[in-house]
Image 1 (cartoon, rainbow, N blue to C red):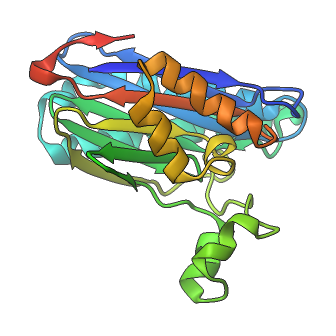
Image 2 (cartoon, rainbow, N blue to C red; image 1 turned 90 degrees about the vertical axis):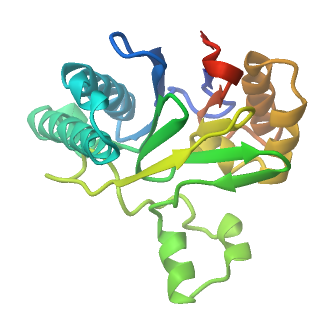
Image 3 (cartoon, rainbow, N blue to C red; image 1 turned 45 degrees about the horizontal axis):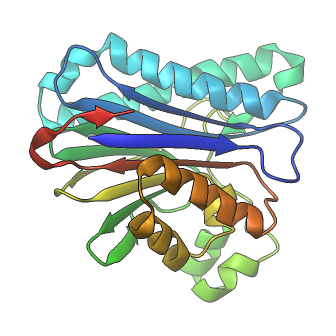
Length: 255
């Protein structure tokens, strides 16, 4: 497994409220954890929420790592419980500390084990699969525009320019409990996974992401080029990207 991750404040925001993690888990062969979170809240509360969420999810998984030796259902339940655990920590902090009141964060995570990936998702950060000549989204945004599309109120092509496109309907830490989307996917040699915040996905078309992901010399360069493309479009938000590549025969070059 190879990976690279990068975050950038963008060209407008004064604080980077994104957080991310790329880490090989100790004690289990060929197992890696990748997380992207995009915080929200007044002052620096968004930065606190995203950082806490990433740390608490990772901590919970490491404390319960024996579940990764069990079946698919147990692994998916581990991810669900990790998100619930992090939600509880962020929510309690938000109500105890006045400067953190109302803070929350998106969270999109990939746990890669052998030739499978397990996904946990809350909010509108995204996870994409790039396979052969296609890019496909593995997550659905928990956002107002998605709800409007489902109701038939707007057309999909209207979503990018909708005045409320940044309104999310689900975030970690804003309520006592949280419902997350959990899924499992099979990976093939050569597959790429992109995890990113909406600072990238709102600025760069998927076809342009695909061209960068397929054309860059290495994964670090891929992350840098994706962020540069978002900044060329105005860089109105913080921008974070993790790119993961499935290697042949379990080759391990995670970084």
